Length: 428
Ligand code: PLP
Image (spheres, rainbow, N blue to C red):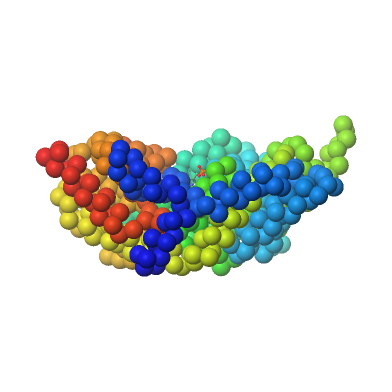
């Protein structure tokens, strides 16, 4: 994507031209949430102004039209992630709820049949069931498992953020219930070797959930090519609305799971004695869904598809490399997962990275760095990024983090790097 295209795309995002503290905003907090293009905001207002009615319930015109938009959105999601069927697309409130859904349902049945006609992992009675995760996980792929009585076992991490695959191969036992790993780290930007992780889990007859919160906005995702069993992502991280997300699951596996919550929509028949449940995916969608959210999520997916996921990935890779190269020239710079603190690269090849950059400069506290950059109009994130176990592994409390989106420019990286230099000077 050349700068001319980026400049044109930026016009779709009105917020990017606003000023903070008298300076044009440089928004580098895209891993937390992305800004919204006009088409997404218009999809929201258009639905409220012209279509609004509850879905799947009314015979009247508006209800039918709202239902059609909602179900078309499911088809848009299906195509976007390459699923076989819309039965496999469950709408949720976001990645966090998708993982809670799976954790709660899996607790009830204990094990899943990873293989067609398989019988699942014959787990020991009363033994605590285990979820294998990577060290990089966001709290939302740790806590739901703990809350549902699972033991969470991390794959040891090597210094460049990659999982130790030899150790991983040895982690399976009769109590393993699932492997649940993020595709891209929200802290280090590491891209986990998910295909290999999935292949090994399947060899052990274990299913895999991929947390796609940080991959979906930055690269083409294909759940069938990956062969993951479940996949979760959030609308707001991919230029869509807040409060809506997706859980993909292979139809055969979703069929094995009990419902998540009870209420309208998820039932077939209800009596005071007995309730029977609806077909997929509605079995998991109790209550009125966020049909305005799903419609505007589809608008966001159409938007990034029109720009081109490969184009976005390539552009963000270039921004990443450009930023890392300049940042490395700043004295005292440590980029976690990329450099070793003595200026040496941990990864010989960073060409595949396009995720967030987590860093520190000398002894400057990340909070000071973030606050002072903010005064220069540059929005970054500071703290533990909801990944405390990773912070423990790195032996730190937190980092400063810059993360890019399709609308960021090389000029903005220049301003960001100049801002870090200025802060570093202030601290002597
Ligand atoms: N997983 C990862 C890797 C994330 O980065 C995040 C959010 O930052 C989440 C899960 C949770 O996403 P949400 O808050 O949209 O549910």
